[in-house]
Structure formats: structure tokens, C-alpha cells
Length: 213
Image (cartoon, rainbow, N blue to C red; front, top):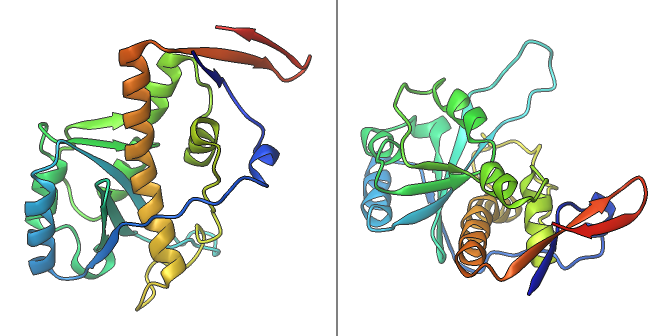
């Protein structure tokens, strides 16, 4: 029986091994590349999904979404929306109900994507809902992943410039991991639900007690 805590403290992650993505990372900065990437991804049943936006440190200034990440187990596609917008092939993929796209806080992503182009999202699964249904109370990707796999997703690049001419290798890794981790979490939780071989250990932060749920 696998025991899973319902939540963890952020400090618990500090000394955990850092997550790396060992697959292929492809940057998509032309419509031609986008069409080829969507053709490959359309053969998948489930992909990980995430987005990045250049942070604004000026009141009233909001940047449009800059990057869309879609990942399989072995390849992450980083689609540079600040260069090519949302081409027809990408909009069609995001609207395809037969391909599952798994992410965290996806409603926020939809809101930002609509600033680039209007489309009807379909086939999306919110990991926060999946975790909540199982009794896991964490809402952020970093804690979800750490709780399930005992590894730390670095957030050092979160507030970097996602509209930069050439993404750094650290940015590429960060962006790929965020989408890939969603896919890995969903696969693991789906298998746990299928087998039933798990129990949620509820932690009472105030009293320091635990109980099975």
C-alpha cells in the first residue's frame, strides 16, 4: 500500500534532488514547424500542457502569453507564441476533444491564450481537480510533483524574460519540465486510482498529527 501525504511543507523540498528533463526539446518559431509538431502530437492520446508569460514589474503593464509548452514522455515542444501567435494548426489541436491535455490552473492559461486568439478549448484535464478528488490538497505543480515523487522542480526561471531572442538552456529545461511533469503526475495518479493501492495520510499542520483517509 502506497502512503501519500495530503500536503507537504515547501521547506521539505529544499534538499530533494532536482528534476531534469532528459528528452528532446524543440523550439517552434515558425508556422511550418508548428504544423509538423502538431502532426506528431496528434498521434498522442495524452500530452502535458503549460504556458509562460513575460513577467511585468510595471504597474498596469501586462504582457501577452509568450510560450506554449506541449510534452510527451520523450519530447517537449516549446511554441513561441510571441513570434508566431497561435496558428490554425495549434488552435485546432487545443480544440480537439479526443486528445487529452493535462495541466495546472488551466483556466488562467485559457484566459491568457484568448489574448492571442479566440478558440474553444477541449480535451483538457485540471490536475488540481484530479488531486482533490483523491484527497491531495496541494494546488501547485512543484508541491504536487514533490509530494508524489520526492523530487524538486526548480522555479528559478519562472520570472525570466520569455520573449528573449534565444531561450537559455535553463529556460528550455524549466519550460519542458513544467509540461512534462503534468503528464507524469497524471499518469501516476491514474494508475493509483486504477489499482486502488494507495492511502492518503492526512496531516494536521497545527497539531502535528496524522490520520489515514
